Image 1: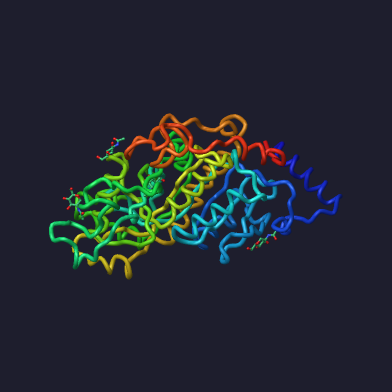
Image 2: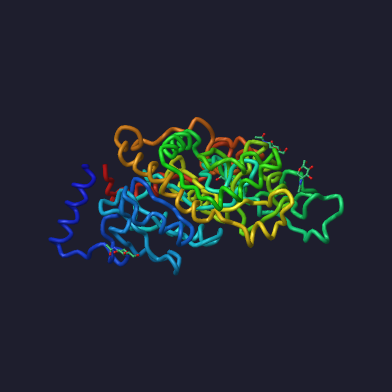
Length: 399
Ligand SMILES: *[C@@H]1O[C@H](CO)[C@@H](O)[C@H](O)[C@H]1NC(C)=O
Ligand SMILES: *[C@@H]1O[C@H](CO)[C@@H](O)[C@H](O)[C@H]1NC(C)=O
Ligand SMILES: *[C@@H]1O[C@H](CO)[C@@H](O)[C@H](O)[C@H]1NC(C)=O
Ligand SMILES: *[C@@H]1O[C@H](CO)[C@@H](O)[C@H](O)[C@H]1NC(C)=O
């Protein structure tokens, strides 16, 4: 409530002073908005899934952010600035570029903001089904590998993908770029899962009929069951992979890169890029890496049902798109409103993670529980205080 009064107060002052109003923020340097929750979507239908919902209206302020995608140039926020949303554009380069722009934009103050990645994804029928809502602890960049066309791969290899610097698909990569694996706050994830379970998930009969085909393989029992909210991990690649063999190959990569900790479940094209941009922002003292929630709702299966052809599954038969979009706000709005309504009692100070969070290099300090260990001797890679001091001179924190 205080936030509302306070920000309305600022708006009134701005009006008295004749300062430009919301839509002109992009061209001015007035006080930054300090959202409690920033929703990150990847393409237009995911973004518009939040428009017209009863819980809140992010179209009350449209803010042009120079450097955002030319297709999605604006962030959207509620009038009081407590909830904002953006669309990055799809795949890793767009996601990294938009989030880097956001993190360094003078229009926003994000040190206490919770980020809710809210997109659709493919799903493994071993773990979930069409319409399932998933929350990841690990994000693994499975596409960051050497690739042989399967027709030219060594015959003894089960897949054409080989980790960088390795000589076989099952060798841990000796060469790391640093974005292979991210781990986010599981304590926050468990809270998000409980909140998401209070939402009512959508389902429809084409999805019910399609998922019933998966029942013939006992390993796909979760694929044949109705959608639910589940904890399982996510795999990123610019290539939209599909089929049993690539599904299994990247399931193996997910296991390998996380030393067996992650459960391969959803498939998408952005999360590790979004996380790398947020990690660099955290390293610069601009965002808090313990305040990230990765939610992906399932639109399609990553592989066919027994007897079906991989191309049919991908091209002709994916009826889960509509319910995956509906389930973004169905599961996500309770999280957003939960964080905002319990801000001062529960969320303002952050949810302390009880385990390592960060990347495979140990950039934020601490020792990763996967991979070869910190390359910075367990200390943070970058000294944060200077960046923070520079920005706090013009922070407006709403609470
Ligand atoms: C923001 O943009 C949307 C269309 O994208 C529009 O419907 C809405 O009215 C705009 N809001 C304001 C405050 O101009
Ligand atoms: C991608 O991010 C996830 C966590 O968000 C992490 O578990 C995974 O290891 C990352 N993958 C790569 C290749 O960086
Ligand atoms: C995945 O790993 C298992 C166990 O090592 C192996 O048998 C299988 O061939 C691998 N699958 C692919 C497609 O790489
Ligand atoms: C993960 O596995 C690799 C390769 O076997 C190993 O070098 C590394 O020490 C393991 N990391 C952890 C944290 O167990």
